[in-house]
Length: 252
Image (cartoon, rainbow, N blue to C red; front, side, top):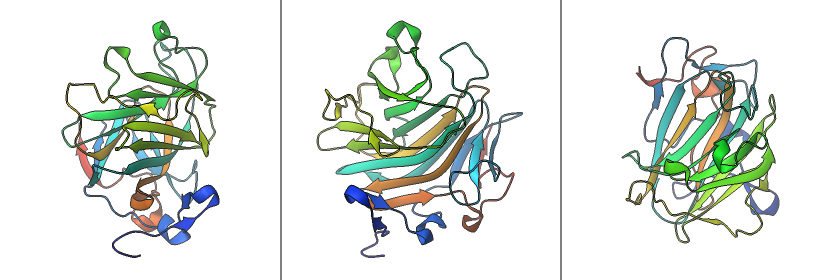
């Protein structure tokens, strides 16, 4: 650890990889988890389905969690996590579909970018096959949608990364180390148009499971200019427990 940064290991093509010690630490966040779930809706850690380590987070229907990290207003921000879904479908009316939405925003709930799976609105050409896609801002009026060509399969782990460049105001989206942006874009231009106000900084990630199908989340990492800013792997060594919700603020 140097100059307040959390050091990783340089991997292939200059990518940073977490060391074993980093995998066992919940660190760098500026808030506890903020959980929104009630009744049969579930946000719990479990050991049956894991991407790495001994636990992963399972999210049931209509469940949301958020957490804040140190504000980033310049340079390159990368939000990386492992995800897995129970049921992939293009039927937007299927209540048992697994639908996951991940947002990057600031403390005023002004969301700059959203990425998720498996389907989008049929009237804008989204329901071709289950796939990852990205939306500029909240996606109001169904604008700013960028589909990838990467199919999302059930019962498979994917390592996803959204890379937001403050200088160029562009984003990139990666799945399992492969850049998913269409070849015609050298980084998608980001308008941050959604409420007429551009976030001056980004400091929060929101993860929402919005249908009946389960989603699993593991190993969330926030990077700024190549340095690890915040991380959790949901492991026992970090204080998480089997069958329990992450420690934090619970809201109905």
